Amino acid sequence: MLPRERVFESIAHREPDRVPLYVWVFRQPGVHQAIEAKYGTFEAFCDALQLDVCQTFPNKGLISKHPMTQDMPEDGSKRNIYGNVLTLDEVLDAEFTDPDDEEIYTRIREEVAEHRDRKGRAILLQTPGVFETANGIVGLEQCLMDMALRPERVRLLFERIARWNHRYIENALAIGVDVVHVSDDWGMNGRMLMSPRQWWELIYPTEKITCDFARRAGAYLSLHCDGYFADVMDGVLALGFQIVHPVQRSAGMDPLTFKQRYGPLLTMYGGLDVRTTLGRGTPDKVVEEVRWLMRHLKGGGGYIFCTSHMVQPGTPIEEVELAYQVALEEARYA
Image (tube, rainbow, N blue to C red; front, top):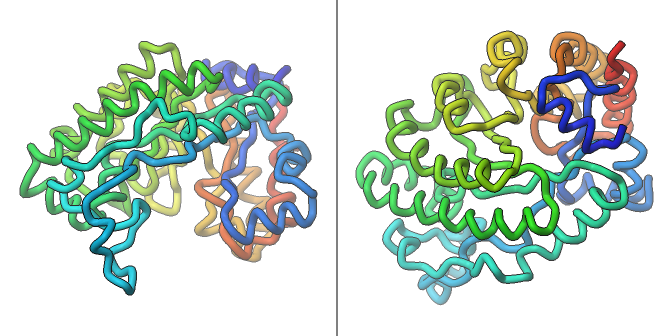
């Protein structure tokens, strides 16, 4: 069975030959260098772990130019992932990247060619979520304040982000991605970053613009949301998501309850916690957690084994290898 077929069977809540596997690394410093030192290339590492998925990222974000570029303090204190922190009004006036800019898709094309066409893996497309993208531009605290004090202006920004996604998704599907993976962190430990009411009023209707378009375009639809978001699970279902990552146990989400309650409806993608288990220097605990996850979550399909987030710097590669060796041993369906 090809890796893509294995993933699609799991999303359909059928049992393939084994549970699909993936690991979040994403070329972060330290970890990626350690992998290349041992395996020669990251692709060889993926082959050795028998991974079934590739998660691909655009080369550019949404913001290409904005008015504060010349006014950044010399100490860089206002710098964030887009350059400088913008105010809500400034970002509403800012120029967004042209979604037809070919440079956005360079890495996506390369990874589709390598991982889907050559290796048969499923391709997940990292896609901007409205809240996460907005707070990456204006800052998390300011975004939450604006949601409380200027909700109509925030909604305009969220809508603008969601509509940019249309052409981005359309172009990426034409290249050959399989899954639109919307990244939108709504949670922290034990609670959400915003009230459920705010989520329903501002995030749900604007995220729906992206989700509806992706489903109409024929893509599978996946959500990444760190932290706790159990309070809006009915909204996650209403948005049409088919896959959820990571269902983070260390933040108060219970994978077993998730499986029991949503197993026929949502595929769980994740499980192996990078905060409490992987990289914490306790190989026996890694083995125990991997076995528990597989034995409790794989039944009936609907499970893709993965880390809860990126493998953290300082994690021994041998510990990652151990986790995936055990995962392969446990992944087979009888």
